[in-house]
Length: 314
Image (tube, rainbow, N blue to C red; front, side, top):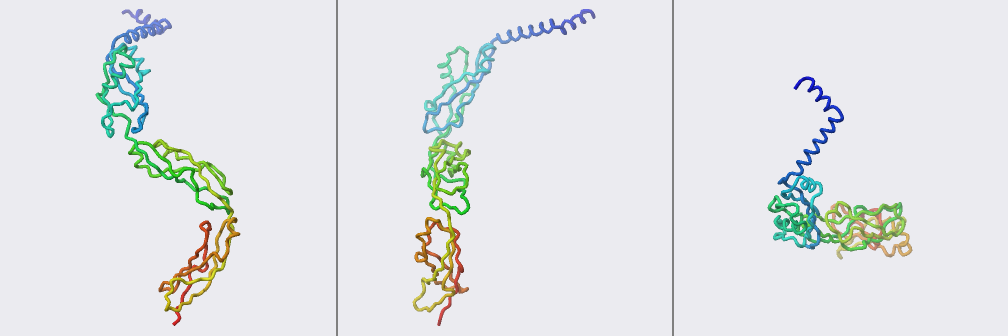
């Protein structure tokens, strides 16, 4: 080839006409290549339908490679838009639930039933696949709260918290539920409380995602009252004292202080309370004072003094 011919060729390839020629040539080559027949693999999507109560799906979709003999056009299309086979879990021929395996000959028959042999499918590459299913169990939990409700200063809960349900049930795979010990709920955002309340509590997301739950939201309620400081002076009585022992204590009375709901104060007086020490010989010669008759809802109880000294009179 002469120098003039080489220069002319470079000028042609660098021109618009040359570029169009190269594009046209590439298109012709691509069409020719795609028209040829190839034996290769394409993905087939399996879509599992959860309809078996004794099995739980860990995923609803998976892909399995299938070998086909078809044109490049068909292969390219099936790789971009994979065929899908819907598989109800109830109809899967699973022999061992602890090790669920499916023979791909079953998938081949399903594929032919759905699409015929128009795509020249030869079969699936693996002889068998592990299924994303596991045996299901049910487990019940007593609801618990991640944190206690917050109350305004001076206000307290006067009854135990009440839940709208006594228990919630989880349905899921055995390995997961065996490790799950609690059903923990979080209360909806709220300001500090000062009145009776009923709040919605939601199961923590990380727990809710582990299984199917009978309830992921519950109601939590309680009664609230303002508390007031109360004090009484009580005489001390001695219990468990031997009959042949002459015993005296000092001091003979104690002062108690506590916080109680305002609604309780009209019915609360010193006659319903007792300060008691139970005799038991001690090297220190002291007995611990115990208060009886206090309602369960009182808080911040203090006893002054908490101990009294005892003396045996000969």
